[in-house]
Amino acid sequence: MKPTHAQDRVFAALASPVRREVLRMLREEGAKPVAELAARFDMARPSFSEHLRVLREAGLVGEEKVGRQRFYRLEPVPLAEVQDWLSPFERFWRERLTALRGVLDHMEDEEA
Image (cartoon, rainbow, N blue to C red; front, side, top):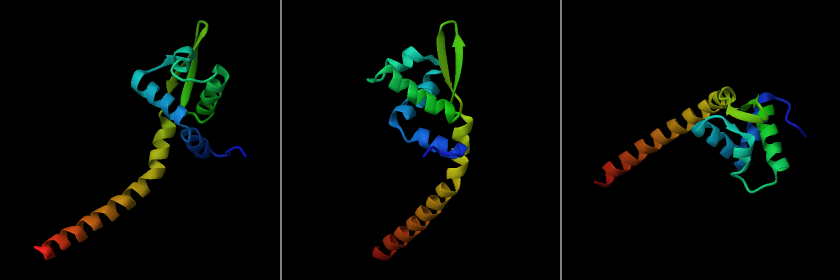
């Protein structure tokens, strides 16, 4: 079953370690031609192209043709949307850890 919502496509794209590594490379190194990206992975070119297609459909990468080469670049907006979605969970855990720190500090005071 194919994801139907934009966030579903982003989360599905991020589920693959190969696709996360491609995003990391594009973030750290900037736009790259397909051949240079593909050369870093031990897989057939059609398999790698499928990973790029998933990233494109999720809106995580953009593609530009320059001469005979296709360059890919990171499109960060969907990642910001994921961060917005994750933010309440981050606050939840931060509050829980702060409360735990308080309990542990109180325990240390009682033992002293």
